[in-house]
Image 1 (cartoon, rainbow, N blue to C red):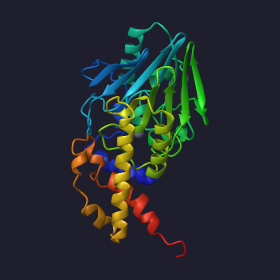
Image 2 (cartoon, helix red, strand yellow; image 1 turned 30 degrees about the vertical axis):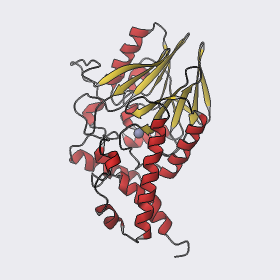
Image 3 (cartoon, rainbow, N blue to C red; image 1 turned 135 degrees about the vertical axis):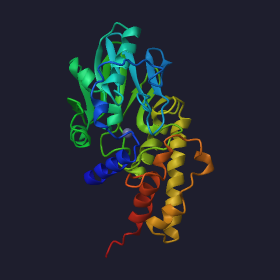
Image 4 (cartoon, helix red, strand yellow; image 1 turned 180 degrees about the vertical axis):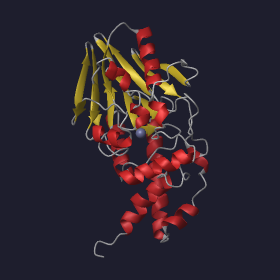
Length: 320
Ligand SMILES: [Zn+2]
């Protein structure tokens, strides 16, 4: 899995495509001079609820300069702030920390990583240098070290449902599955009914599916829909929305599953299946991150994942 992953990364770098999971070495090194602001970073600061904010990146893949294609957010309580994800670079994390400072004089108490991918953890060195605890789940330290040893991993590991208290504010962190292997969490602010969904939700963007299990992802999305039917949802990528954006994500996975089952019923090889399904369906023509649908040889795209997870696995006989 690791070598496949690294192979994938290199293929992308060679193709000059900077993807969510690609760390171009210089990208993580703080750029000393040029400062960035929200607009040059392609970010909009959105107040999702009282004292709950999202920074929403409008960038696409391949990324251009400092323009963010990733979201992050923060929750302000009477005694401190919880930051959710740190973007892909220290520069972007510093920009977020400056926004927080402009909104509150409360200290940043904790940083939560919704999963290990470098586009959400690449700015961890900023809170680490300030002595702020960074929280993550499961094998996140090991997976970050494998993805890029320069990344600063969380120093608090949670393996079950966890509650953060920021004075008058409560944030509940719970485990979900599917986007990565055992590092995914979501954060819910009950009193504001805001769900920070991390990469469980890509809104109007093709998701990265090469690192987990679509089946588990579908299951977790069903559960989130039932648990938080009236939540405002901050996705890992794309605009903030209501639960309809989770339903759309689920709808896309159900489409991929049906497509893969039709390949299986026709007995197609992976090459045949992918060759005849290259074109992006009308319903998804406007999605960003199009390279993740069928492009990028060497990187696990959505069609590869669909075949591997729904066609191939079902085709393996129990007794050879
Ligand atoms: Zn991710």
